[in-house]
Length: 437
Image 1: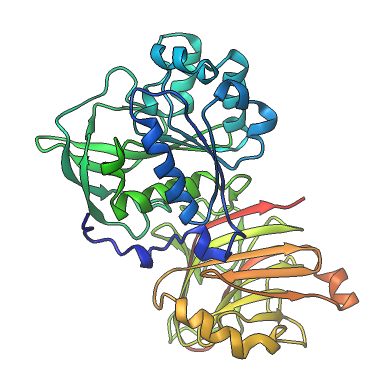
Image 2 (image 1 turned 180 degrees about the vertical axis):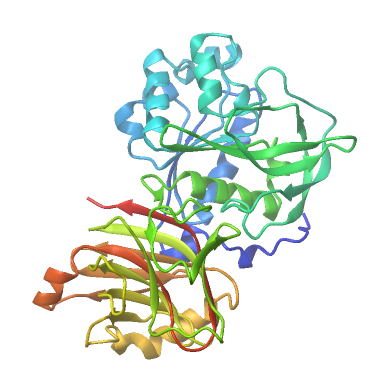
């Protein structure tokens, strides 16, 4: 199916396969075994789509045996391709959810497992019981009993919000599917993707919410194998799972304010959901400026998107150990911009470039995947003396061996740099962190 206004290889949110050869794989459990739709045909397609994107996917057709707290704890995301039916229960008794299964499922999502509700799975458990009401809240609504659709047809899917799930997607032609209408959207949900019903309404196709600590995504697309063939559908499904599956991560920037950050507000602000550092050419800076978290971190993984415009480099500094942010601060800086993409630099120290030996080989790799003038994906993982980073999936690292540095730079804040000198504009968004044991 031809896609419109979406270039999949250029999307801001890259697949796990692109990020680091298994380093960022999401562990997914597809829950199925009963459904009014063709689950035996759609489940292998879902598994294939996610596996090709670099994720680790298991399937259970026996929820009664596998929906236990201990088993569900092993997964980052649950993908629901299931509806309880009388015929299915008779054909496959182990597909029937016990009370213990229901409790384990709800508990897993509440504790932080992501949940992606696929197409008609939102019509499961509609008997009016207490469990059906809880399930409705867990899954953020959907078809339930009031949903309906017209004849199968092709239609255009349009992103309505700038969100990690939709980033880089404007619209695409979606092939022969059921266009769901009158879906239940629970309180607190954010609609990301819609489709025009051809008469009056833009109907929600993808929306998100939370249940406890778990991220929840409803994706109403994908009635059958034909509807699942388009590149737009497949990329959207991968993005849904990747966003939902960031188990254990929390946002340290709310997208609206600088709450939890400290710095010189002469240079730093929030614009269009990003932290922006700006210095015009006429405004002198005595030294670099840093916006830092109030909170300190020990071992952690940081994920964000960064854009650097100007003729000076910027960077993200980790394990900074000063409270007042007058230059120099001390820490490990992951440099970005002006031929410094991929540098690990000792900010405020004498050693400066710490991974100098690999730069000749590293720079061409990073340059080949950079999105110049746009947001790029950065991951930084600090564990003990080892600092690893990935720029758009290209890995590099530094292992600290200096005894004094190991004492001083073992724990600290996270800082964003605005460089002195020529005019510069830097932006950081979707900043989230996971503390490591």
